[in-house]
Structures are given as C-alpha cells and as structure tokens.
Amino acid sequence: MAPTPASLQRLHLIATGGSIMHNLALALHRRGAQVTGSDDEIFEPAKSRLAAAGLLPAAEGWFPEKVTPELDAVIVGMHARADNPELLRAQELGLRIYSFPEFIYEASRDKQRIVIGGSHGKTSITSLILHVLRYHKRKFDYAVGAQLEGFDLMVQLSEDAPIIIIEGDEYLSSPIDRRPKFHLYQHHIGVISGISWDHINVFPTEEDYREQFRIFAEMTPKAGVLIYDQNDEQVQLVTVPTTPDVKYIGYGPHENKVRNGKTVLITKKDEEVPIQVFGEHNLRNISAAKEVCKQLGIKGKDFYEALATFKGAARRLELVGEGETSVVYKDFAHAPSKLKATATAFKKQFPKRRLVACLELHTFSSLNPAFLPQYAHTFDAPDVAVVYFNPHVLEHKRLPALPAEAVQQAFQRPDLKVFTDSKALAAFLHEQNWQDANLLMMSSGTFDGLDLAQLAAEVTK
Image 1 (cartoon, rainbow, N blue to C red):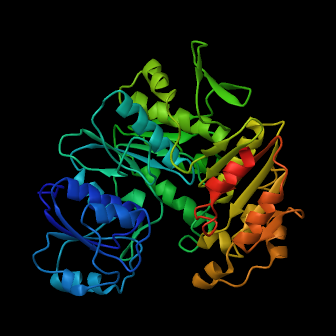
Image 2 (cartoon, helix red, strand yellow; image 1 turned 30 degrees about the vertical axis):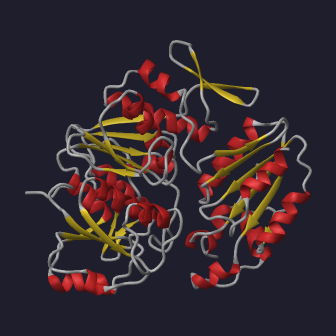
Image 3 (cartoon, rainbow, N blue to C red; image 1 turned 120 degrees about the vertical axis):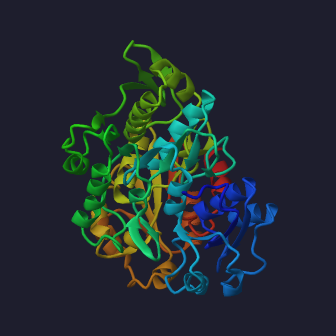
C-alpha cells in the first residue's frame, strides 16, 4: 500500500531549513506526524517558523544519531550532499528514503495531479490557480515555491482533497536522485509556460535542458491534458501533438488594455476586468491559469471574479512603495528570459517615467562566464541599468573573478552600471532624481541585506 501523510508518522528531514523543506516539515507536523530535522545552516524565516512549531533543531549540523530504526521514512532535500552523514546512516539502516518530489507524489497518488512546469512563470501560474480555487472554496492540496498571500504554508497535504496543484521545478530531485523534480509527480494535467536555458551546472547545453521538458510533455497520460505557451519557440519543439489520446491546449497573452498605468483584461464578451498585475508575461500566466481552471470546472466568469483580487505571488513583481510620481517594485527575476520580460513589462506599463532597474547576479548560472552571454540585450529596456554581485559569492561557488567590463560586454550595454559593494549601490540609488522615475529591484537574493523598505520610502516620498 502506498504511504500517505497519515500512514508515515515518524519522519526525519535532512536539510530541513530549505524554503520548501521547512514548509513540508510544518505541513507534516500540522497533520500530526512526529517530525525531526537537521541542517548545517538555517536562515529566516525558516528559523523562526520552525522554532514556533517546536521543530527547530537544537544545533546546526548533521547528527547521524538522529536517524534511528524507529523512523518510518527520511526525506532528503537538495541542499544535502550525497555523502551527508545522516543520509549515509539512513542507507545503512535500510530506511525508506524520499526526495521531496517522491514524497509529494506518494502522498498524492489518489489525487488528480496538476503540475505547472516552465523556466519562468510557474510560480505565478500556480499562485493564480490556488487563488481562484480558494476564492471559490474548492478543496485542494498544493506545493508551491513561494509564500502566497492568504496561505500560511507553501505545502498542504490532506486526506480529503481530490486534487493537488504542484509547481514543477526542473532542477534535480535530491543528491542521490538526479532526475528533474517535475518528472516524478506523474501529472494528469501539465503546463509548460516557457523554456529558456537555465541551471548550466546541471544541464550543460541548451539541448540537454530542453530535453527535460520533452520528457515531461511525453509523460502526459492517456486522457491527460498538456497546456503550453504556443508562442514560445522552444516549447513548440517539445509539445508536438503526437499522442491522439492527449488533449493539447495552446495559449497566448490575454487580450488587454493599459490605462494610466493599470491593466484591464478584455473578455470574449467584451467585458473589462481590472487586474493588479501587469506585463505580457503575466498576461500569458493568466491565460495558462484560466485553461487549467477550466479543466477543473471553473467557468470563465468565476475565474475573472476571483482574478480581480489577485495581487501576485510574493517577490514576483511585488509593490514595495508607491508615491505620486514613483513606484518601487521587487521581483524574483534573475534568469535572462525573466529579466527581459520583467524589465520590458515595467517600462511599457509606465512609458512616461524613467526606469532605474537593478539586477543582482546571485545564482551559479548567472555568475558563470560561460552563461553570461545569454544576458545579451535582455536589459535594454531600463533607462538606467544596474548589475550588482558580491565577489565572495563567486569564491563560494568556486567561480573565477568577474571584471565589470566582462559583465558590460555580456549584457551588450556599454552604459551598464556594475557594483560589487552593496553600500556603494545604495549610495548610487540614493543620489538619483526620483521625480517621475520608478525603481525595479530584481534578484533571487537580498542585495546583501540592502534595506529595500527604507530605500522605497525615500524614492516615493
């Protein structure tokens, strides 16, 4: 019999401090399971959230003695290494070992599984679907990679929900399972929002990367549904309708108008629906979410009714401050395709305002000299374009030094401002004239602790 959240009562999480892993720990604890965990570094907000639930490890580090024969299973996060002492102990004892996606699959075997994949947009699409389902009081489980407004956890596993909505990451499942996460969920309804080469440390060529999405598309079962961005050239290469028993649904950006910096959707009945997000990429995300919701029995008018109150996923074009002549947004964008989409959308939304945009290079791919040329002309939209990175991150990732000139050349923008000191970056931003100007901060990091709230207050005063 397949294990469920109810049948596995004694669980140990290796790398419990991760963004999604600590949410899983909290979700399992809420279900009544006995949960323990370990990690060699735990940051906020995971630290406080685990502590409040009584799940924070007494000390950081790895402790093989925590892994005992009494455990029902061990769940290992991607942050752990293959030679992790706790993982080795679990293998030695012959315990059941799951990666995060394996566990989610086993816990949802009897549910309809909707998996949202893609290089960009998957968090926003997943968030949209969850918002609409919750608005209409539908029962559902979920696993999503960002904190959402109105949801206290990023993971929910229950016994009675008939469906589960999963953000399908293409990165590896665990240190001992090199399969992409979204291959393990075995979707009934799949989405591919777009394909743009990423994770160069795992997929060394664009072809290797694209192949993972082809496998995902071909995993769509009989009577299953594959929903895809019909305008994305890379997606078109992997979503060729080859299986007659699969329903293929292509989508594009939703019809819309922009008035005074606000986006309004135009429905098929020529009705106008004001929304709180903007940009062509979000208009595509809305179309994808609408198609998924349609498959789940949500009618168009009900979808739009719920959509009007959707504010977006955390850190996805999130409003930080607003004044009479300026706005400040932060965004998770860091990959080339995300950077271009976000910066272009922002400029189009406020065409009469000067745009100052800052990108932090923070991931292995974004800091890798072999990958940097992928950023060519992706940062052309801003009036003032700024790139920041911390040289210590390069050292930590064992990458070579990155001269400012090399970054400018990679972006194909000679006037690109490059900073390697967060205080110097802050000083530069404080010096700018913010009359009729907007600020956009983009990173998967924190600009090394830059106080964005204080900066936003100064920009918008």
